[in-house]
Image (cartoon, rainbow, N blue to C red; front, side, top):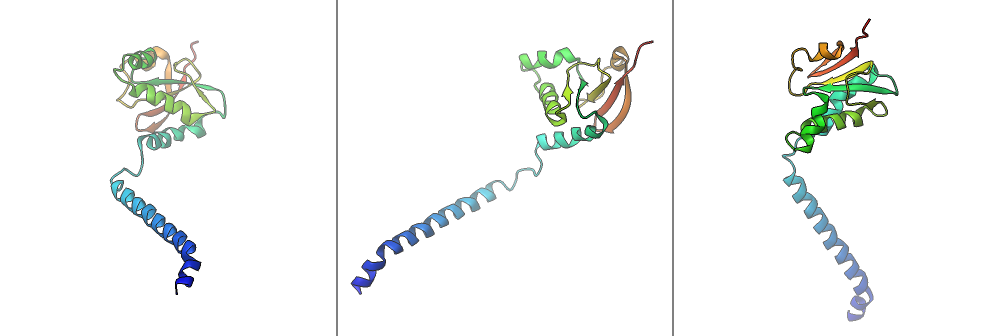
Length: 151
């Protein structure tokens, strides 16, 4: 009997190691899935991408478009430098990322301009000041404008 055990001792040790390791991994997996059940199914980045991706069919395959939001374009980076509101900069960068390879420029003077009004409509006179005419309202504060040509 002792001879039989000695013959399979190394194999039994390996098998026990595999079983215990598998148990530990499955136990960790079970614990982590229970911990993260309360996480939302869709994160803010995915929601933003889905919202901005609606513009793709309306834009040229390459080139540049302008960008406007609730605040003046110069304030997007100014607010980020003082950390008063980085949301505007984050929205701008995510819009660039989502619409690539189209280049999104932080200015309202291009033929097509993306309006991303996450905090409500622009200030009165903002659109007229920049000569922006709504081309397509996609809802939820997302509007594609065309730059009105001055005669």
